[in-house]
Length: 43
Image: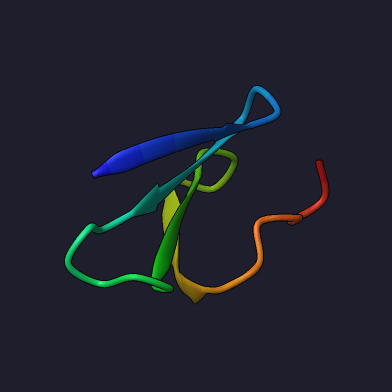
């Protein structure tokens, strides 16, 4: 998996087996925001 930093509080992971499917690790609430295709989630 490839980790891409978003600001200081978020990280986006894209599975090499599922191109286009992004999982955003939402540290502020401890939940996973799955299925996002955009990475401009505020930062």
